[in-house]
Amino acid sequence: MDLIELYLGEVGRHLPLRSRRDIRAELRSVLQDMLDERAEAAGRPADDAMIFELLEAYGSPREVAASYVPERYLIGPQFFPIFKLVLTVVLSVMGAMALVGLGSTLARLDALTFLVVLEATGKALLDFAGIALQILGNLVLVFVVLQWAMPGFDETLEDETEWDPHSLLDVVPSERVSVAGKIAEIAATLVAILVFNFYSQYVALFFLQDGRWTFAPVLSDAFFRYLPLLTVFWGLEIILNIVLLRRGQWQPLTRWLSVGIELFGVGIGIAMLVGPPLVTLSTEALETIFASDPEAVALLVRMAGIGVRALIGLIIGLEFLDISKTVYWLVKNKKTPVLP
Amino acid sequence: MDDTELLRKAVSELRRGVIVLAVLSQLSEAQYGYQLMKELSEKGLDVEQGTLYPLLRRLESQGLLDSDWRVEADRPRRYYVLSAQGAQIFPQLEQEWADLVATLDKVLAS
Image (cartoon, rainbow over all chains, first blue to last red; front, side, top):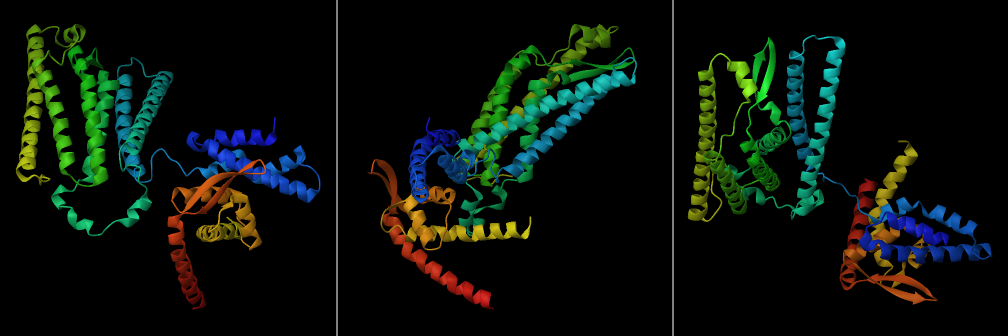
């Protein structure tokens, strides 16, 4: 097979599909011109040795292809600091949870021999490494999607060189988004997603059994039926917060989006409020803790149910108040409301 | 990084912007890439293929150049020429260059 065609094929493998054919055609023409010139200078027809020499001088296929492709990245320079911060916060929280889990495991062991501790620690480390990779992958995915799928997110820092200092006057201080606050909200929401989706067993009642600490998960099956909707709700909140971080201030559109997301959350909350109990305890755990006092068991379950519903009711009430205030201002003033 | 490498990088950065002007200056009439490279080389400005061809494509995507394929002696070649916009902008770039040279001469002399 023609060496030049082989070379062009290799170059093409590293080029984007849409421009591959065109670039290869141009390279073919260039290489043939160069080869003709070399043959003329050597006073003999081009042969394989001459082609090898030419291709070596022209550069490796990867290098040649790279010169046609602009620098690419998954997470751009504008978002990398936020990505790094969120990742650090989430990994720190998950690391702390892993330590608590390890402590709980060790506390439940009968004898703390070196090998047993080593095994438990090794298992905890492996578990943490797995979840850390999962967090990293999910966060990268979220940031990549935001960067490339949303308008304006792929702007480079160079685009900001055209900024107008007058725009500083356009931002009403009270409408400015608190960067630290939003990052904290994002981190907390991510933790909620991870805890309820992957570590739900640790949402539990911890108690002493035969002198050892143990725990019993408290979330009921009913709760897990709402979890996909809750995860979507939290995901939307994260996206909105990242948009707000990007824009730096509240605007009517983001206020309306916020109202929509909050209404969605209120809807889920109402369904949870009127639905079956969200917390429960296994019979085994109940018997272990309150074996001698059945009345205490009934009281505990009733109080827990009332407590959870009261909490959900309170959250719904606060959300509804917030929504009403925002909508009132949006309709009344037809501009971004000045909210704390 | 040794002195030679530092100098090579600095010169490379210095030449980057200059090459755009040099390329535009030669394309009031259509030329194909290899022909242009040789012409620049004959005038003392060596530009590597790995720099020239991507640059031509970038200038075209920016609207400063137009291109078309022509077949000569059974060989297809891509010819580049200044676009209407490129032709309008080039004299201003020339003026910018002249001003820059004058300014830098003053700066370097001081």
